[in-house]
Image (tube, rainbow, N blue to C red; front, side):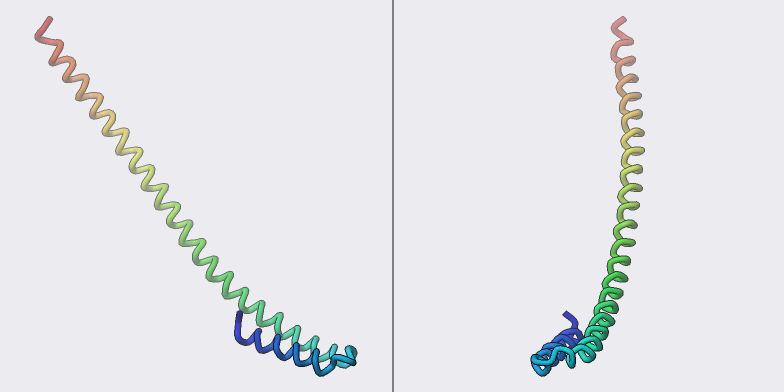
Length: 100
């Protein structure tokens, strides 16, 4: 947790202990501390969201790289299959040719 938010929470605890018998008197300072805490949490969330967005972009880039690699390997496999098939057919013709 953010040290600033921990400090605000401790301040809120202190306010509760001081104003334990008079909850109405504790409301304005508690409301102020709650607003400060919400601001700190929103800033922390914004930093986390930016980091997550950067990591998501990185993963999308890696995914497209994998797609490109897969397409390249598929193309290479098809070319090798056709070459092998042609070689086998040629060997069949040369093997079967003289025996007829």
